Amino acid sequence: MWKRLFDSRWFYWVALALMLVLFTLSQVRFGTNPRPMATPEAIAGLSEIEDLNIVFILIDTLRADRLGAYGHERATSPAIDALAADGLRFARNMSQSSWTKCSMASMWTAHYPVRTGVTRSEDAISSDAQMPAEILREAGYETYALWRNAWVGPSFGFSQGFEVYHSPRPSPIPPSIRREKPTTGVAGTDQDIIHSAREFFRTHGEKRFFLYLHLMDVHQYVYDEASALFGTTYSDIYDNSIHWEDRLVGSLVADLDRRGLREKTLIVLASDHGEAFGEHGREGHARDVYSEVVTTPLIISFPFRLAEPLVVDAVSENVDLWPTLLDLLGLPPIEGANGRSLVPEIQASIAGEELESAPRYAHIDQSWGRKDEDPQPMVAVTEGPYRLIYREAGRGPRRAELYAYASDRQESRRIDNEEPEVRERMIGLAQAYLESEAPAWGDAPEIELNDAQLQQLRALGYEVE
Ligand SMILES: [Zn+2]
Picture 1: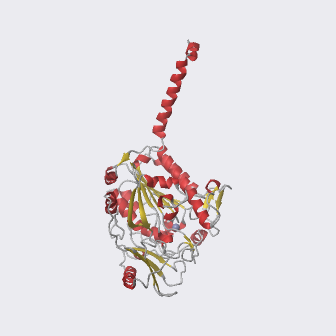
Picture 2: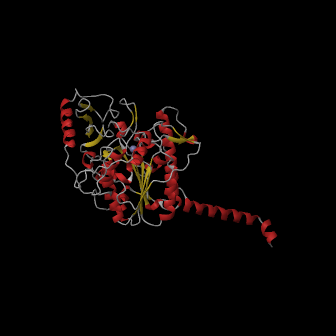
Picture 3: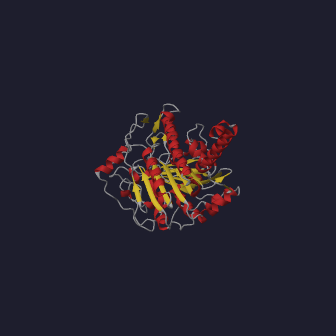
């Protein structure tokens, strides 16, 4: 009988059909995109989803304009672009500083740098500040962070609200991986974070979680042979490292898919600042607040897919990030915040409208790393079609440069003489910003940096005294 069965043509047809059915089923369960389609109106219903997770991916030093989703002509970022393609993208997002610690303190607390007081190397976030991880933990989320940048270490107050705030042990770097920023020397790569994140999904995926990943390979100009695509200048190598980082992000998203977690996870992708390549005479970051160092991506991928990417064109800022997410999740807002929920802007863009935006600010203390020098604040004010770069007299001369930002996003031509009244009014805004009142929690505490911390910070390429 068996022989007859194997001889029968039908047997092979049935076996083939069975294999096809099994293959198709496996694709449904482990497919690349199991999320349902939805209309943008579904965004308002996110707060109703009871087991919604959050994966917050912070890519340190990522300029928005180097991503395909933001118009870069090179294919640096297919995985990140895919998040934006069926999700939400803020087209003109800005960070609050070009220096990690100052910028991240403002992002988490939703307060401008002048109010967080975290503007110099020894400043820390007050333990009385209200942090999103505390709000999420209170709401029942497991709160877990993986980081590699010493500026967001626990001693500066960044671990508030996290049950686990972990910097993974660096693995040896294989010879196929290059790091071409000569001034930096942080051990390991972001593979260490991705590996730990996947382990976290395996062990904690059943619970409701908030996972914060602070990736550093773009800051470090890390890439491998498969991402050595764009040339040999620093600017090219920066793009290589974005491609490398994008592949890591892609592997993380694929892992969420594989585990069936994607359809109950909100993925948020942001950066703390950009990177300069000589646009205003400087390279790197953490020195000024021109647009190339503070224009950053902000992308939200939902547990469902939108047929068309939703794009908010109004200017947004990283101080708005958490007020927006907390609003979307139906959680209480951060008290006394400068940042505000962008849900009205999201609704306006669904309706095809655009809202007027209020003045927005970026800030760096240009002497942040020099202990014995007085503060030297440089402030950028963005309002309507204009942007002003302002520095009070101190070590250098007073500076007030006005740009027609709406038509000159690179800030390449000053219009001080053409619009003197606008310039004076915006100088007034910058001065009023610098006089802002302290937050409810009072001044920022100062910590004494120990030798190990100083060494870690210098390894990032910063001059810290
Ligand atoms: Zn940074």
